[in-house]
Amino acid sequence: MITLDIKDTKTGGGERLDSYIKAHENVLSQVVSGEEKYKDFLGWFHTSQWAGEDTLDRIQALADQIRADGDAFVLIGVGGSNNAARSVIEALKTEDSPQIIYGGNTLSPAALGQMMDKVQGKRIYIDCIAKNFETLEPGSSFRILRKYMYDTYGSQEAARRIIATGTRGSLLEQICREHGYTFLDFPEDVGGRFSALTNVGLLPMAVAGIDIRRLVKGAADMERELLQAPAIKNTAFRYACLRNMYLEQGYTLEMLASFEPAFRWFYKWWVQLFAETEGKDGKGLFPVTGEYSEELHAVGQFVQDGTPLMFETFLNVREATGSLIVENDGIKDAFDYLDGMDFQNINRTAFEATVKAHCQKLPCLILTIDTLDEYHFGQMFYFFLFACYLSAKMLGVNPFDQPGVEAYKNWMFEGLGKC
Ligand code: PA5
Image 1 (tube, protein in one colour):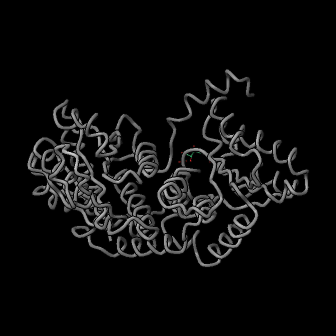
Image 2 (cartoon, rainbow, N blue to C red):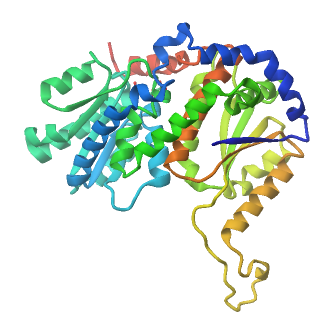
């Protein structure tokens, strides 16, 4: 379950929300009834379509094989092809799992060199995840790593250790068939940033020891809830309405902030989801993130006191993971007020104080999950995917394209001599 609280003494957003919802509830009903217009992009909409029992069995079996004789797994992918998996893996990975190495997300020779250093001497598997197998970062990293695999293992064993996730009929599939690599479907009807609950996100997570069944269960439960809840009680719809309401009021940024550093990579997923889905036709909220409490000592100044650009959405975890008591070591350091206190309480107090201070100056929303675990990651994925779709529709943009990323690519490909 995800709850939404509004702390907005500044603009009174909470009081205006219900009438805004009433004025826009047709957006929710269109989406829930399944829009013909976007049917080719809605493969993610029903979790069971690409994360049903059979798929989960197949993914888990492949992951178990990799875990049995792999020290490391290289996830070759960029943007939607790696952000979801990375967000969960970096928050929840288990110590006894293969190391997950990220490749295919940079063109920097220094970073690529570091990636190659990490694979040396390890028994590795690689998974090239690319929906459009023309993207430069994964395509070029796949080349480098493929060569390494052949040089290290010879062609037969290399082929056994190479996986690729692409669309049916693509050049990537053809390469897999010709060379004997394992091929997994990148669903044609799921865009990269919507692909968390498909082979794309789930295989790397399973390799890292993530309980993908719990994660998918969380998403499926959230799907059921959001497809049934009426507009006024629908948490994702309420959130989507608030986003558009604040944009219309002149706020141009949404800051997602949390006191859990484990969300560091989830932020990247969230930023991509909203930026690429909504930032078009000269519209959209610019998504930014705040890693609190650390960044209260940096951007916190601007948030409280700078140009009033943003509203803030806090990602709150009700039950803290871990517990650590501050003990008195007898040294008079003026921190005695912390004696015997658990960091759970310290962190919570900092969070509550921040909301109190910020909501005097800017609208604050609080999205709360119960615990930081697989189930709730699944809930958050579905929640934000659904909310983002609604929000983009309300904004009046196509949620599923990304024409803006082509401009630089055209210049880059021309510079690199691609015909
Ligand atoms: O959401 C999207 O569609 C994009 O961000 C893609 O995920 C990203 O560009 C990577 O694309 P590809 O998997 O085709 O290399």
